[in-house]
Each structure stands twice: as structure tokens, then as C-alpha cells.
Length: 260
Ligand code: NAI
Image 1 (tube, helix red, strand yellow):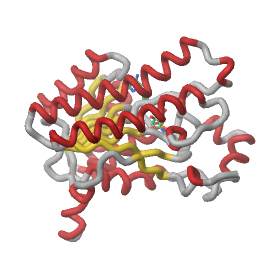
Image 2 (cartoon, rainbow, N blue to C red):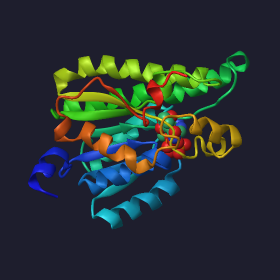
Image 3 (cartoon, helix red, strand yellow):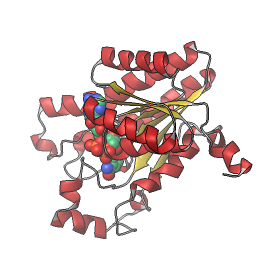
């Protein structure tokens, strides 16, 4: 990498924590951050799975990695994950707040149980992780960068997605509010708003006939490749993004700007 690119994107000497790292976008973020030079803490509920992934990323990149159990719906679990990160690798100054679930159903059929589960994970869970992350950075006197994985469904809406899109719109607003408040600690907060990427959260839908028809109607006529989220992430967390905060960045092949 040239010195010019290194100054913009290298994460050497940084510690990153990825919440929801056991699959899909989070697993790929963890590897991308290590490839860019960060030591990486992988947090998820399925600890056996992230242990294997953590070892694989360490072998692949030569960076230090750590797998920690993390349930974003449990405040004690969030604190314990940050404690383990700090003890083993150092205070994370890059935090990918990525855990999320979907429970699609028509708005009229949504149960309180479903509503609470989606909100507790997608919105309150991201609030738990982001506030814990920022307070640790503040207490350590270190600036940093928090990236919340929102969605294009936090910017627009779609059938059967009332709870999910409401939670993700909340993440977008939370991102903006935290960005103005955490600036005083040198902590930037941004949201990535992915379009459709095939992962465990949506693969059965995207492989179905309605899913394929849906994707064919988007401007790019394809789902994203996980690699296409890496450069936007690296821009948001690296030195090159030092004046970028409070942004909700769609990475979606123009899906979110289409009016049909
Ligand atoms: P995924 O299902 O592969 O990953 C979700 C991750 O969140 C998993 O690692 C899961 O274990 C973790 N998770 C769920 N509940 C958790 C909890 N209580 N505590 C800790 N971890 C928990 O799906 P994907 O696509 O990788 O999702 C990652 C994020 O990206 C989610 O926030 C999702 O809403 C968002 N997203 C995904 C899109 C897509 O097309 N795949 C589009 C837009 C946003």
C-alpha cells in the first residue's frame, strides 16, 4: 500500500470490536478491519462459531483477534464484552454496531412479542453498544469511530417491514444525535445503510421467486457483494474519514433513490 493510501485507510495500532460478527456482514467486517491492520474483537452469541472465525482471521492477517460472547439485548453482556476487549487487546476505538434481526410480517399481524424482540435487538441493542463504546473511549481519553449498521429500510419502507424499518429509522436518528453529542469526546458516529446483500437474515427470501423479481426491479438488478461494503466501512473508521460524522450512507447501487 502506498504511503498516501496508508495515511487514509491504515488501521495499524487500532483495536476494533464488531458486534454481531458470527455471520454475514459482521463476519466480513471483522476480516476487512484486520486486513487493514486493526486487532479485532469479534462479539456474538454463538461463541464457538466466532472462535473458529477469529482464529481464521488471525491466521489470514497476522493481527491479534479475540472472540467474546456478546448478547446485545443484555447490558451486562455488553459491558463484559468491552471489559474482555480492554483486558486482552485494549480499548476499542473502532466499533461496528452490527447485530440485527428481522421478523417480517404484515403490520396488522405484528405481535407485541415480535415488536419488542426486534426493537430490543436492533434499536436498544445498538444504543447499549454505542453508549458503552463511547463512554469507554471518553474514559480512556481516546477518540474513535462508531459505525451502526442501519439499512436502506431505515431511509424508506417496504411491505412486511414495519418493525424492522421503524427500528432502523431509529438507528439513523440515534446515529445523528450521538454524532453531535460525542463529537466533544472525539468520537464520530455514522450509519451504513446497506441495500440487499445475501446473508442468513434474508437468503431464503432473496432465493425465492418474489425475492428474485424484487431484486430485478432495483437499478443495479443484483444484490450487493459483501466486499462492496468494505471500502465504505474503511472510509468511515479510518483517518481519511476524520471529518465525517452523523452520516447515514447508503451502499445499495442506487436502490434507495428509486421511485417506482
Ligand atoms: P446475519 O443474520 O448474517 O447477521 C446478523 C448478526 O447479528 C448475526 O451474527 C447474529 O448472530 C447477530 N445477532 C442477532 N441478535 C443478536 C444479539 N442479541 N446479540 C448479538 N448478536 C446478535 O445478517 P446480516 O445481513 O449480516 O446482518 C447484519 C446487519 O446488517 C443487521 O443489523 C441487519 O439488519 C443489517 N442489514 C442487512 C442487510 C442485508 O441485506 N443482509 C441489509 C441492510 C441491513
